[in-house]
Image (cartoon, rainbow, N blue to C red; front, side, top):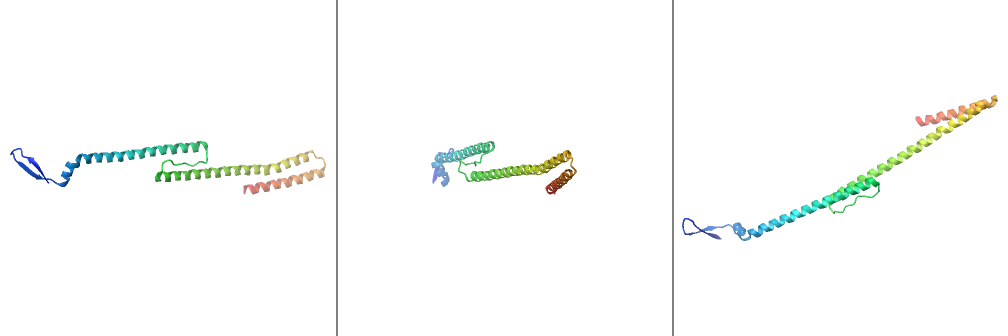
Length: 171
């Protein structure tokens, strides 16, 4: 293929050979530009749509996390946008939330156990002290020597029992 060009210095026609790409550009150049622009617009639109959906999903997840934190519910995070990366991320978050709940339950159980242990400990110490106090009152009120010796023996026995309890608790 050649192109005819009129020479400015001479009134003659000059034949200039053209490459195939140049010919295609002349023939389809306008349509190719339009097609490229349309393709770029479609790609840009798809990227913007994906970005919008990601932002919407992050907003939704943030709201769900706030709800779970404030209400202390057993609900799990859910995904509205079906994307592999977001699903993996949400599953990891759900695992962390479950781990936190398990730790919280464990801490609550430990706290209850400690409270029950202190209640039992208090009872175990108060009972012998109350008995000692009662026998000491009887000892003070008694005028009979035999009763006084009896109460003194009981008080000694209760003191030894209390010492044994305290020794087992603190060793």
